[in-house]
Amino acid sequence: MVQQIGDSDQPEPMSAMVDKLSSEQESPQPLTTDIETEKRILAQKQKERAARVAEQEKRAKEFLTEQEVAEAEALAKARAESQQYVDNSAPAIDDTSSTESTKDVTTDLTVQPRTESQSATDTTKSSEAEKQKAVQEQQEAQRQAAIKEQAAAKKTCREQKTSGGRETSRSKKAGEAQAAAERKREAAEAAKKRATKSPSEYQIKKGDGLIKLARQYNMPVEVLAQANNLSPSAALQLGQSITIPSSKQVQRLEREAAAAEQAREKKRQQEEALAKKSADAKREAQQKLSEARKEVKETDAKGSFGVQVALANDQAKADELAKKFRAAGYQVKTSATSRGVRVVVGPERGKVAALALKDKINSDPKVNTTSAWVLYWR
Image (tube, rainbow, N blue to C red):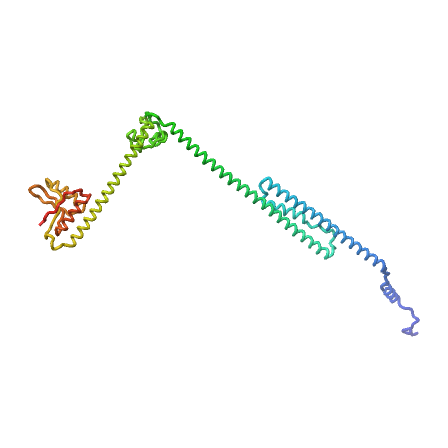
C-alpha cells in the first residue's frame, strides 16, 4: 500500500501546532489610551507651575520692599551719626572701618533670595537680576554719599581744631612774652634795690667771679675790676676780699672809664693819623728818590754822595746803628774820623738823589731819625 504525499486529510504534526500557538501569543495586543486623562494631568501641571511662578514673584517683591526700608533706615542712621559727630566734635570714625561696615550692611541687604524651585522662567530671572543690579547701584551711590558726608564732617572738625590750636598757641606765646618782660622788669628793680649804698667788703666764695659779682650787684665788670685794681679777666682766689663800690662810686668810675676810653680812642686816632702821614711822606720820599736816580741833570753836582745818619763814639756803637739801618733795607757803611765813627747810607750818584734819600730816611719810622744830612762821598 502506497501512502500519498500531500494529502490534506492527514493531521498536522504536533511540533507545527506548538509553533503556531507561540506566534499567535507573541503578537501585540491593542492598548487602551485615555486622552482626556492625559489632558487633565497636563493642565494640572501647568496650573501648579503658574502658581509657583506667582509665589516667587510675590516673594521677590516683598524682599525688595524690605530691602528699600532697610536702606532708608541705614541712611538715616548714618546721617544722624554724622550730625552727632559734628555737634560733639568727636573724632570721626576711620574711613576704612566705615567703608567695611557699610560694605557689610550692603552685603547683608543685597543677599539674593534662594529660589525654591529651579523651574522659574528665564524672563523672571532676567527681571530679578536687573532689579537687583539697580538696587545695588542705588546702594553704592548712597554709601558714597554717606562717606563723603563723613569726610566733610571730619575735615570741618580738623579745621576747627587747627584754628583753635593756632589761637591757643598765639595766646600762649603772648602770655609767655608778657611774663618774661615782667620777670625782667622785676629782676632789674631787684638789682637796683640790691645795689649797695656804701662801699663794702666781700669775701670770695666758691664759684664766684668778677662777671658773676658784677651781675649780682648790677654794675659793669670793668667798674668792679677798676675799683679793685684788677683786670676784668682776672681770676679770684677763694677767701680773697674785694671791695664792692657804692652806687656813687660806680657812677664816678663809669665816668672815669668813659673818659679814659675817649682818651684812648683819641690817642689811637692820632697815632693812626701820624702813621698815615709818615707812610705818605715815606712813599713820597721813595718816589722822589726813584725819580732822582733815573735822571741826573747837568746842573747837579757830579760824583758820589752819601747820607750821614749818625756819628758814633766807637765802632761798636756804629756797628749797632748800621745793623738797624741794614734791617730797614738800606746800604750802610762806617768810616772812622778824628771825632768819631760815621754811619753813612749810600752812596748815591748825584746830589739830588742823595737829598731824596735823606728825606726818605728822615720820614722812615723804622729807623726813627731826623738828623740825617748829605755829605760828599768822593
